[in-house]
Image (cartoon, rainbow, N blue to C red; front, side, top):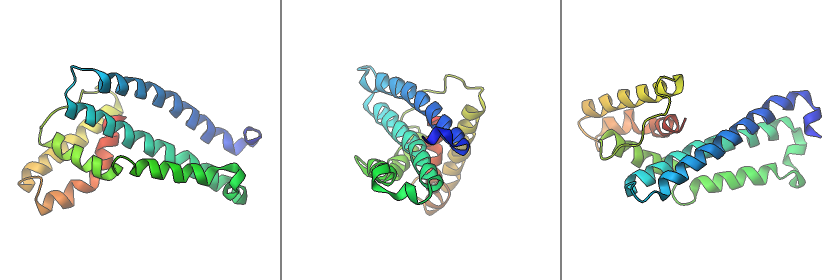
Length: 168
């Protein structure tokens, strides 16, 4: 079994921990997405944040496992390549993650609506997200709008990073 190999302990335990966190994150996102009092754009924001964050977390373990399994990682019976391809397909289904993130970040920076703040605003991850958001809101003001070339060059490449920071 793979757990007998000492070098596999960390990636498997990290993946397991991420699974528990993802399960709780999914519960919170579903509560917000099914709550009738939550506006539609905020529900869509929750879905985008969930998708961007979880797809990113799910891609890493399959890559790590396949690279540490050597040629075995490519064999069909291990299904590692199939799982990775499925994850890539998921990231494209119902809207490409990058496209969804660009739209969400553009709308949030323009303050079209707001997503709930972190439940732990003083945590390092929350402060990182707040810093990214503040920096790019400043960039938006300096660029002269969300359709400018500068916004395209300065903010859009960070869209996925900003959304994942919200998700963390």
